[in-house]
Image (cartoon, rainbow, N blue to C red; front, side):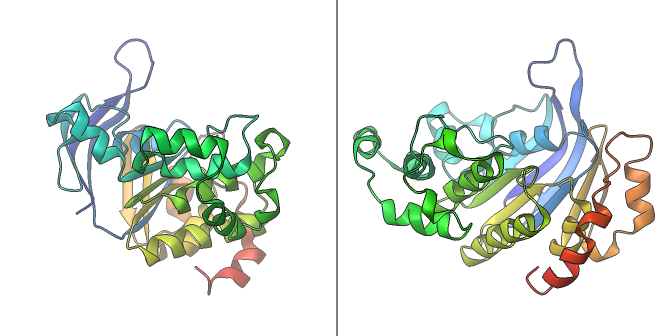
Length: 270
């Protein structure tokens, strides 16, 4: 089992008072599962991903990750556990003056010694691995470009290439499609899913593109107000359930129609 959560509650990171981002969550995730997280803004998707990445400590409840209770072990052991997890935030932390090759190879930092990391900044240790990872997102020509010369969508895909060169057993991906058009969005999801399948890694991806989630993921977990509203196979999630999930919320997933044609062509890939 990759994750086991029982009655987990988590405070908002940096929020004043006792505001809870997650409330009494129960969730089991098997190794190799691929799950889409959906829900309106503020539902708790990012907080859940950060909790699973050991970046947020639960206020209450129990959390096991890869058979380990991360907050009942020492900091060195917890650091080793984090090295087995890859968290990809919506805005990748890419230094603007860094070359893309170095930004991608940073995915190997948890496995490198300090000396190897410093040496790679001066002369990239494995540029071919970075080139091959970028090639899966049609970005191989950006290998030696500076990060600040990339578009927002290129930066997002650069962050995904970083995941591919890592040794992670778990991919936790937060809104990887926000700066991508429908065609690139589907390509990115397909690459992530293919990589997760190849290494039997667990993939949990938060998405606002609900129709992509329904078409490409076999399991969908929906959050609202810090609670799980439903946890179902993608094929069982109806339009009525989606409408209720986003009821009276500003982000009512208007992109349904925008990706419909693209999805029809892409379903064999998903």
